[in-house]
Length: 242
Image 1: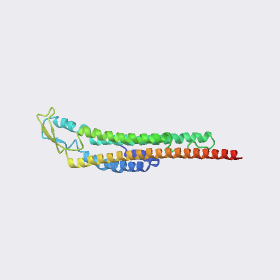
Image 2: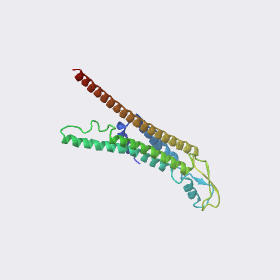
Image 3: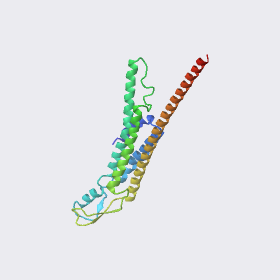
Image 4: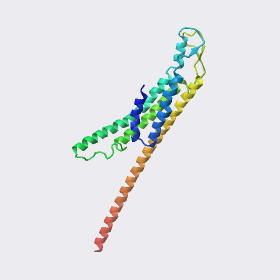
């Protein structure tokens, strides 16, 4: 998987993000992608090769491995990172669309721009950005739930028992470096939880900023209306006095 290409694509959205979005992007690529590429794949690379059960029955070890590890952690995390980073491309695509639309508008209207700043989060782009945050938080939450359901929690036991066919009886199965694997799994879980928290904070920031802006506009409109009515009332009084 070409993580450098993925990083270059998603990093393009950094200039359109808020401070919370930049922190989220840094957390994804520093605490998740780099750890995944540099360390996690090496730690989990021997999960199948060094998985052993105390039996010589042919096929028993493979069946027990498939039962204990129905989905590889590495592949699940890879899918999670892909799904989580893809919504950011929605924002980039929308900005590129607005830039192209603005370029055509300039050509048709002799230098007059349709957008003062195509990357400014206003109108449809604001909703696209907010929707991308919902998707990112939703994907992270979904994958954390999937991991929890598949492995019955975020623990990794040193000893697992298996009694599936063709095992002759209940056998003991062992994985290599269970403590190290558990540490990396908890690290990825905590990193995902922090990313979810940052997405929620950014959504609250955007919505709060929009509410304040709307209230300010309403206040200014009411103030202008009041000043206008006061001015009109003053003019009528002067006419009556004359």
